[in-house]
Length: 144
Image 1 (cartoon, rainbow, N blue to C red):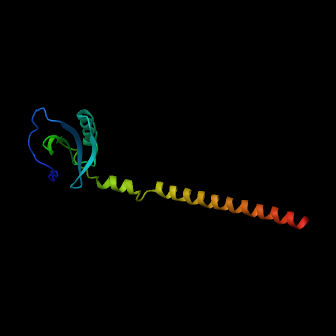
Image 2: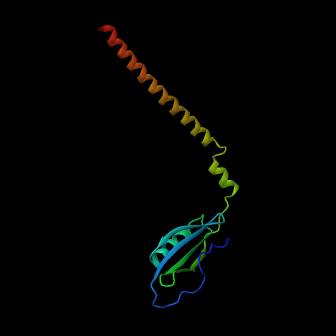
Image 3: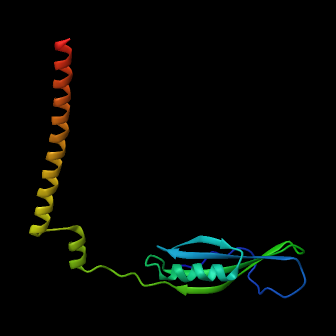
């Protein structure tokens, strides 16, 4: 699993009386790359989103990073407060791949014939309407 990119100092956040602003970033790992999915002001909102993302089949891992901005000391401290691995990627079997691709079978031939028939009827119908309009317009101009 790829290491999550780190920013700022990695140290525990104290409980002093300094003016601090907390934000929670939800990161996800997909195809070996970390992406910030969202930034939340509330811890529970970030955890809820992380739980949703863990269930996503394309996420390899999800983590929540608490970022604390200490206004008095003008520094940012971040720490990972939740990290979970996502669902393992399921590789489709040969039968599933073939079924999805629509290879072979009389059903696909029937669908193809229906599609061609609908296309021919639609184009023929449009052509018939155009011919009828032309006939009507030519008939009007000749009678005047």
